[in-house]
Length: 310
Ligand SMILES: Nc1ncnc2c1ncn2[C@@H]1O[C@H](COP(=O)(O)OP(=O)(O)OP(=O)(O)O)[C@@H](O)[C@H]1O
Image (tube, rainbow, N blue to C red; front, side, top):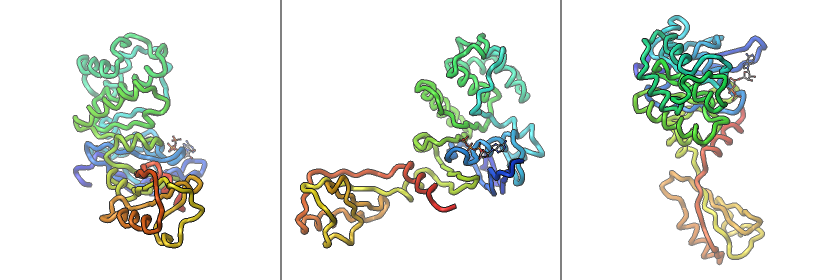
């Protein structure tokens, strides 16, 4: 095992009792201190994967090492390094916020540390609610409690399962601030999402999962560059019914009912071909009123990947 891996997953598979194969031969190495986004549509297997790493779901095959500890053979030590912010809210409890945090911390054998818990609660704007019973809190506040609970034992690895689904803007902002702070302290963060925007903004690396298979793992920037295409849209001075023969060899498409020409080019290519495109348009007597370029987003990349045959 490489020493810089926070989590090393090898040949992981999960077949539920129903016979449903939720994960199939997943191998993945999460680097220490990175923010890794696991991107996939509903039912892709993200929660199952997290469940296995956190000891909630039993794998059918494969191995997981968390912070150097095998999650099956050395479960308690492995689990103590991990914080999990789950998707589901199991927070209908009479406990106070403070007691819940204290308990979560103690559960992993960490000594009580009021100063640390106070800081955590303040960071999550929960300090005023410390003596409130969790069940009396609003949905957003309960969500904050879940995050605080996950962090109460100072884990070195944090899982966020769909962290911003149904979350208001303020909490999202607080959460990303917190995540940035954790990352600065060297905490490894793994988040699952089907919001591409989230992965695009936050992650260092992205893994795409679908039908229980890991389709790719790539540095975010490399992924965007490798698969990214740019498009140049030219608004035509005069409507066009078809692309003239003289330009048939170019990657051009007619758009907006013949009022625009769209030229697709490789954004990482040394030569975009735009200069020669413009020259040839001029030679063909085609005028345009306006032009703009657009970079394909991770969203399009993602959609195209999922369209690929299984
Ligand atoms: N306990 C279970 N028994 C049988 N099938 C299950 C069980 N838990 C999950 N599944 C199935 O396994 C597949 C993967 O589910 P999982 O929750 O891991 O997906 P996900 O990527 O987290 O999706 P979502 O974004 O909707 O949470 C789904 O088809 C789901 O129906």
